[in-house]
Image (cartoon, rainbow, N blue to C red; front, side, top):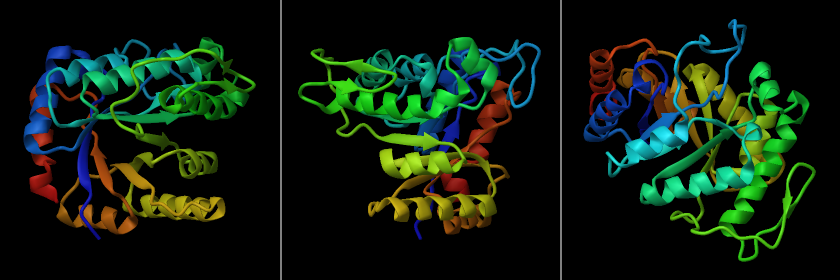
Length: 280
């Protein structure tokens, strides 16, 4: 089994919400051979903080598309992933344009990571009922693909419908790679049905193996015969033996995540300690 590639979860909050720090980190990651940079999303979070919110209400977090576009201008090879955009809280036609624009300005380096969301106060504030987040995710992704690929884009669904419109440019990448995030069976089904890959955040080798087994079962049930690329953010510090354990569990990419409260110097040390040449 081949060794996983190594990506970096940016934590586009805290110190990396400083664009100068984010550029230093991105450039150094590219120099060290990281294959990808990933940025997550929370438009709003509850005040006061309540579970399962991952951050305090006064913590800054940059929009992932804006940050990745900024980093695209300061890098040349590393791939740029959204890890993940909460799709049902976005307008799909506007988002389709934004994603294509990012793919174009980066020279075809975008990986579109999406999820259905889990933070009820955030979804409710934006006007998305929790009960609709799955159906909206499915429709919005299908609608975006129609805009990216069809000669005469059109879509009719419960939540979105359009016809006799068009949007150019098309993506540089054909197809534009899509990754689904989430641990639930619905996320597994969505990944094998609609995506090129799956992304799991904070997993051990053991839980990675469980997720991969569930994905393979979902693929068999759906009749999918092409491989699904598996990306995982590991929950433990990496060394060569641990990397092999994740590879044996079925991970194709490990997206390492520094401490959110790390300062700039600590971030650079983290990059060097987890560089592909050091741990693969």
